[in-house]
Image (cartoon, rainbow, N blue to C red; front, side, top):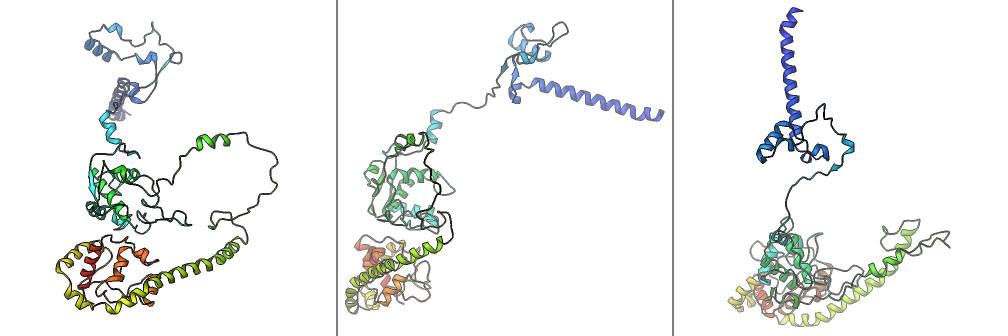
Length: 437
């Protein structure tokens, strides 16, 4: 026992002393930290209570008498009951009001009437390069879309179709929506890194891709509202809050309810209407009944289109000079110009030594070649059938196709919207003619 007292008692006593000191220090720290900073609401009586050392420091700092600071409760002055005192709400005192400049930096919206448009300008030519660098990976080189990413061009006259193509050119009513979205949210993963001039240029290129402006067009703040969107009149003001909502809030009718609820019509998409036995077969029968007529119409339209174009093609083909003659007679300056214009086609097509099929077929020896016959490339059904029908590429047929591919050959997979200038078409033909098979 004596050994225990001699060895362990001092140690325990020292430990107890340390723990006691730590407890006092911790208690003093909690008291010194104002309750609001601890996230607590405190009684008014405690809100003015300050420990003696802190009270003395506060009195010296403010030249106030120590008596003005609430002292610790004593036996002669018992502490007032906390529950009887009013509660003071905590105020953290963090932050400050935002300045006008800071608010303006976040306010990047652009309205349909042009409000919010920044100063700047951008050309179609600059926009093409910017679009290729920042947007083409998702939206395609010609704004035709890539994979499941949105198409930004095309869709003319499809809004009334069963499966409309909604793009900037076919659907969006205001150009400000295009500018605002690009400036605010694009490029994907790097939002708001484009300057105002870059945004004007990319918007101009999207307009060009939808055949809404010429290739020398420059979009500015001044001419922004002059651009007419094809579907500007295709929207109406949403007045449901005034015309419909009051009807929905009326007292519901609880009389003369049907005993049995039956499905009288079905949607063509089966996952929209609840399934029931025999429903799939019913829809299949309706679809099969309608399909022959649709296919017949499509086939008839294709035959008429090819028939209307083929006679001129077949008659002109024999008169077309051989590829070697075309290459020899071509103007070197025209070929050089064609090489520059062909940059728009390089995303899908290759020419020259080692050219391979990419998104589109390689184009070596295209002059005088039957359409849809490049080995190893999978053509659209429309292109293959046109080739089987006698379509041969020459200056006349290729010019018609390059001007507007989808109009010239309905059903083609070529997503390019076409070349507008005849000089550019002639230059590309000369350039392609310089590459033999």
